[in-house]
Image 1 (tube, one colour):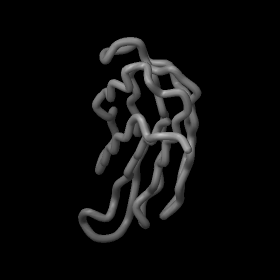
Image 2 (cartoon, helix red, strand yellow):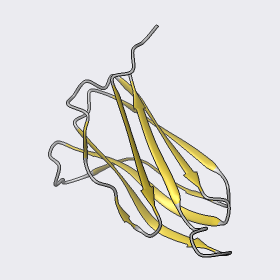
Image 3 (cartoon, one colour):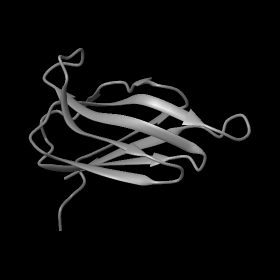
Image 4 (cartoon, rainbow, N blue to C red):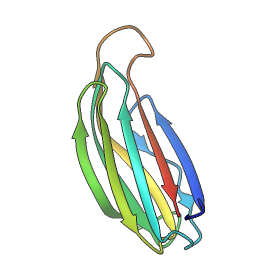
Amino acid sequence: MPILSAQQSWSFTSTGEGAAFDAKGYTLEGRFYVEAITTSTLSYQLRTARTSTGPWAVISSGTLSSGACGIGGVTGPVRYLSPRIKTLAGSGSAGSTGVTVEFFAV
């Protein structure tokens, strides 16, 4: 049974880049989960780089509609990881627009 070597979570309420996460090259296999809050639609990129400041290479990208979940994978080793939310729109009450990105690796 594989042992979890890394885990990171980012939350967004607007467009932008997540803080660089140092996977320290330990990641052999990893999965990103991108989840839109119920009233949000968005486009995203999952990225990796050799340094925390880039330049960044896109591992995976996509679009999600309300309440959907997207999955991206990476085969390592990788060093720095960062999601980028390119577009984010929503409707409903304040605080109902957003996205959560989680990364798990073995």
